[in-house]
Image (cartoon, rainbow over the protein chains, first blue to last red):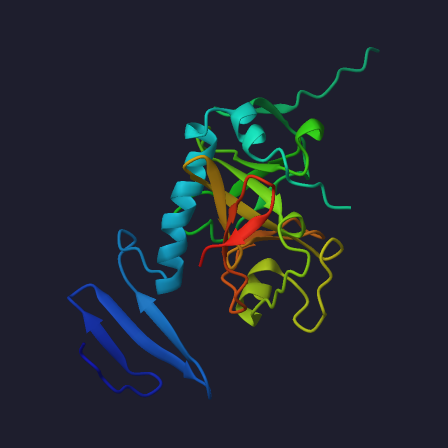
Length: 81
Length: 158
């Protein structure tokens, strides 16, 4: 992994089209600004894992055998007060 | 003069059929959802006989419908701490201690497993009940991913 030190206002380039700038630094976090073409997806790493889960979740309705089948799977869930 | 009923817009769902889109009932998602960044509006649908299930139907994509449960029907002691950034996205008061059911609604997305379903309780859908802004937040508190068992309980799987 390439490790670089940057101060606030300084940036790094990923290829010719992507720039990541340090916007703010606090005690526990750094705020980054990203300039990239719209075709480049910029996301937090943990959000990428959730994106994969969400695509699977969207498949429940369409591949789950219809609403009745899903309801049958969930038949033992109590209704909260 | 005869009064005419305003025509309600109809949203087509591949899963739920035709849904009447009533003004003020939609959820707005300023940043979409991870993996579905293009989805800016969801229509929440509850079918009384199928409660507590909540269906979130995309108004722009008929084939995108999420099946959800209120987190309270999965774990009774659900812990949530929403970050400053997520509160800003949801337009929530930054200092207020949030009350589920009054300020916010937390829904867990269900995903398929062979013969069952699972859900990641650390990535709930949060709805601001005052303005219907909605976002999926990634929690630092670990509630875990759970699988529905045959007896209706939810086992922690990771």
